[in-house]
Length: 440
Image (tube, rainbow, N blue to C red; front, side):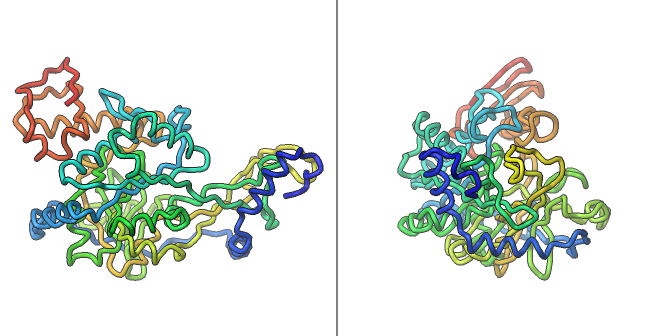
């Protein structure tokens, strides 16, 4: 780390020393040892299909669960947790991903969609719903400025708690750290599972306790259809069906090759297995004529705050072999290896699931809650997401008796409605033609 020390000016030396002081060397040494145990082979993960509770299951009293969830919200027991550390690079966007314009008519940002859902629920249930946002070192300041410049989209700034994600140095195949620059040690974000330790480190858990929060609605920033405040989901989470520690949402996979994590059972517990860790045989396996592993994760969970606090140190670390640009210690030149040359470490938030005594999965409707924006073009792009958002808006209006053309462009603001039932409470047009662009 100090190889180029004599070449650095005073400011660069101070920067490097500050970074070195921030590194947890005990943890790093532990992770270095874990790389020595990696075997260069893969094996099939032993698992079985996950059980789930479908919203269409008539044996469940969904109305009662919704009332329970609404009561919990009114009592101020729910907060929202958003993981938003990513940049919009893959989308061709220069800012944080949360600032990306995502809606089909007004072009509201992903952050605004979430903020307005929180605002609508806060007004509907006459309660303050705090919003916790995990950023990254790269986008933390820009995110804070973006929210303030937009007046936090109507939310009180004291109800928004922003904290950065942790980072961890990578290690080369000799067990050494790498230099990204002569005065910068290469580090990478510690994964979305890092949100658990970051909540503790930032003081957010203490802030939640001061508000008497009991549950967190966890959502990633890139899915504008997700129901951020869902009383039915919360009611199920707090019911006898669950231990009330972790409850997750899934949708039926669109096909065997859809690139989403899959809920399964391993060792008697609910887990999520990444699609890249499943064999072709597993992804295509059938049960009763349907995909056996059909429960696709949409990265939506409910966590109890007490469970998060107790589980903060228990998440495992995952290792990936990557190509990392760095300063070569021999030549002193910046190199970009064509082959993997180092190991990165990260944690996954879904590793909380098997730590719960009874984690359960609720199957929601894909067309209601899943329209991710991950790619610049093609599947899961802004174009496909906006089409799905428009389709849901049209379906909601038709359910309320509005004659809407299939070709119409319609957007329903999160401050207008969070469900078909909310739509029924407002004045609606009788019809919307094919050439109309409507924002309600």
